[in-house]
Length: 319
Image (cartoon, rainbow, N blue to C red; front, top):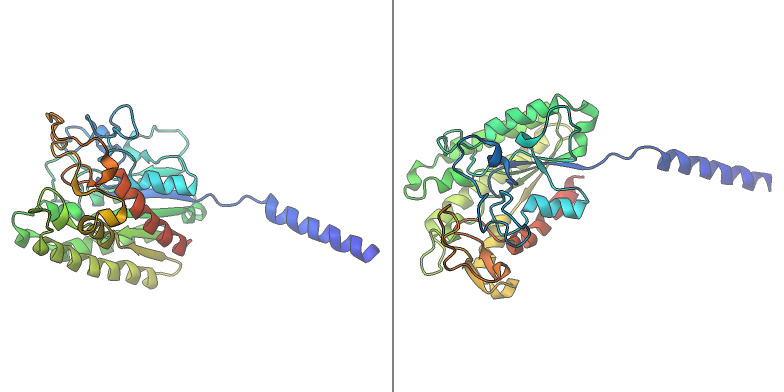
């Protein structure tokens, strides 16, 4: 009987030790472009690349929130699954306040190259890295591993040159990406998820008769193939680093080509005039979830919801 009591007390003591300690809180950081931007450009002076006007946000918000969609974006949806509050724009944080569990650096119009839309008043990928460095200095090194850094950047470098694809410098984009990932490691971050570029040849602003433009998609595929190798290669190169690559390209392309199969009614855009501050709302669809795209470039919340499932698969792999 005495031996049994000793065993019971030993088990209880072990449980108290395990469950009584503080468990690390998973946190998220988002970098990149409008796919992830939850309102950064509202804080950028003279920015002309923004989505804080009607009818953006019509599905989820009473007023535009700066999100380039009808509702939630991928960062919102990832955080909902994880159980985190929505990410806060870094530029909107007040000095001295407690850091939120999820911080967003993404800027609509941003690219991997500083030259991309440099006159649009956006925060480039390299500038976001510098901002993240400022944040990293305020966080104890032992806590940086609590963060998953999710990146969506590079699409605008190609989108800015759709009229002349020869001007796209894939090599420079890939070099910028690799240097950026290495910098994140130097800061102390160890969990990185990179999203492929979407099928830019399938966005409503360039499609002809609903057919994707192969020349554009070929260039995107070339970048994605090499970017994946860089992401996984950097993860292998540095001790303790974990990297994952999300192939959103194939998913969205399949939605456009077979909308009915994936719960859409139309592979095009719901709001063809939404990119303009002076839009008349003419042609605005009644149900955005029926469409793959919200405006001429950005997907709907329905599309983001489907793609987020793949993000979660990849995030789980590196935890």
